[in-house]
Image (cartoon, rainbow, N blue to C red; front, side, top):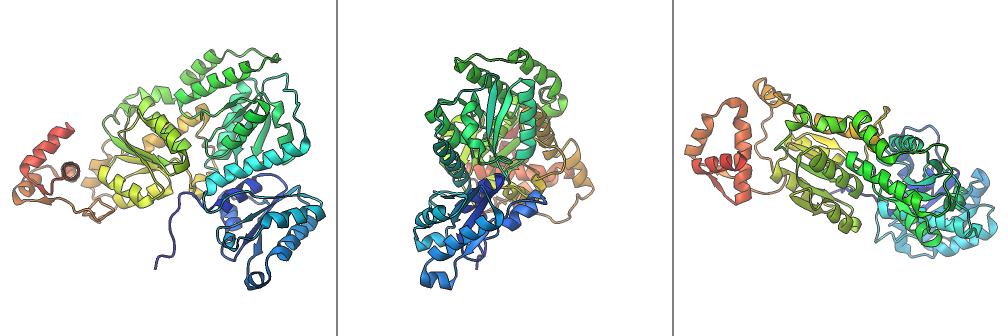
Length: 510
């Protein structure tokens, strides 16, 4: 019996809880059975934080099934209002409790009349969307709720250049380090940060969002719906180019300048920033990635194949960095964000041989086994796949593991992020003579892996002549020749390896 199934993105209520716990003094209540209330454990374990607002579970048990949920839900809302005194309470069901099809919105409306704090119902379809989509929708719903409540449609933008950073939230992949790097970038550009939401922000802050001159959306997964709403209602421009990698960093900065130039209001800045000179100086002297891409170390990666997989933002950015900036071949790249497939395809169409849009880790594993890349750049699941196939993997995307909440400073965004990514790429490959030395000294593990396939594919059969020819090859490269020949045979649909197939494989690789 299968007790668990790997998911790249969790259920919808996890996304809602991530947004709620990112804001200060916001309390989330889950209408859920026992077993669905694991969020508090996950958050406290991964984030290593001493203080955070835990979510409350309004348990669905046999009494609720017999009598209905209204009294219990309303009582829990009023109790938390009295005990915690939050600014906002968000009620969310889970996929399990949604089966009851109760009108929780009506319960929230009733509790709102009695309670002192604001109460909203997370308007998310728990059967149709995942964690990422729900987080994006919930953040937009909170912002819309407070802007509608404040009735401030005529707001004056700040005199000085200013920006809102939207989409930094709890349990995000290197989000806190990325936020620090964005702060540094905006300070260098003499742009004042108006609001950062939701992480560390107050729900009273959204009413001040229209005062900024533009919005910066570092990740497409969360924040884009909010930016589109603010653009529609208040005419606020937004920049959604992820500042990851030297090329996209430059493009993001140019988009920032363009957004500042859109508004007719005069800009009062304490200093005049030459954006092009700043880009040139940072690329040449702060970021070492441009220098590294021209070095002999990076040139040694020429001809090596990689596979990239992750969320849309990180997978697209890493693919472009590998192919465009470092000259490394990306054999296959993909994302589990199926809802953003069109944007992803448009971004990486010129930078890879093959693309995959799926949330099935077994399908990704089979592609990796077929391609047999020199390195993988993916999520924690791809790291586990790489271990089974003895292929190194650099983790570049959520879903996150405790290893991805490092104590040291490791941003992926900004010019310092380019250095961190270059280090990650370099250290993810087997370097120099490492392969040969591991083979000569029996490696770290004496277990021989007979097959490199995660699926039920049959490995090609070697005839006696080809085995004899293989035996003539020096031992320290024999396994690599065997793997490359079998990979060539599988690609060509050849079931029997002969000497002629070996020679053809050699010609194809040379």
